[in-house]
Amino acid sequence: MEIHDVQEQLPLLLRQVLGSKVELISYEIGNQHPDYLVLLIQLEHPSIKVVVKIAGPDAPLTCPFDRTAMLHRLVARHTTIPMPEVLAVDVSYQTWPWRYFVKAYIPGQEWATVRQLMSAQELSVAYQQIGNAVAQLHTIHFSAFGELTIEGNVQEGSSFIAAFRARAQCSIKITRLRDLFLSTLDEHKALFSDVQQSSLCHEDLHKYNILFHYRQGEWHLATILDFDKAWAGHSETDLARLDLWKGMTDRQFWQSYEAICPVAPLYKQRRPIYQLLWCFEYARQTADHLADTQRVGAELGIPCIERFE
Image (cartoon, rainbow, N blue to C red; front, side):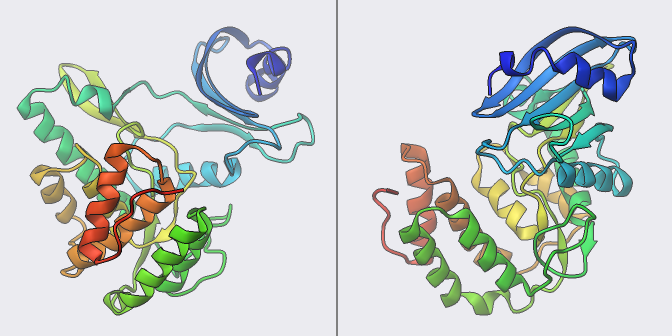
């Protein structure tokens, strides 16, 4: 999908959502894939900035916009994390030849950028805020493990190990890697026997999905983006990815997190298994990713991965 494919219809959509007087002043492309667009749009009457996500039937991303809207509302209701107001969502294709999700814009800069600008004291406070926010997400509990419906329920509740296995089968696309992961999980499944509590897991808390905003001389957590991959999982899956990704945790993060959600003693033993799933799911032939995968694999005693293909 290109911008010219929706340019004529976009003002009509915005009038449908925000009223007949609204005017589109300007826009910029925030993200783009085949048959998928994210637009940051400045409006007048009312004078607001909105984010519009549009996806056609051939979008490579699943784009469950109605489920994402539900998760935004759920997080806003149960945490103090600032979440953008959901203005409209439609996945029916009845009016337009694409699905859409319209939400209010929250100003902020990506953690990838702002952490380079902060002093040591500001970094300490920022890590505390991230730890607190992640812990708040993990206090949202469900009755079982599994994928979430648009109503916020678990689709087919099961044990953690069964839900985790099913998620791996869907997310790891290369057959050889998927088989290796599942066999590794089976070898270590006894480690997960005490995992009973299901929590909201974001699964994509990387440095571009956490935003900060500078106001009144201080950095504040602005919002957390992109809940498209969220599920009713175990909180450790988020923690393991944060532990693997550079610059996402430090001592202040863990102190802030554990003040709300204590970490289980078996986490460090389970951590490389969670990390291996991400390594195989991402499976990019870059030097850094290959090195991470080899390190995680060595912890688990699996054969050295030289190539992903």
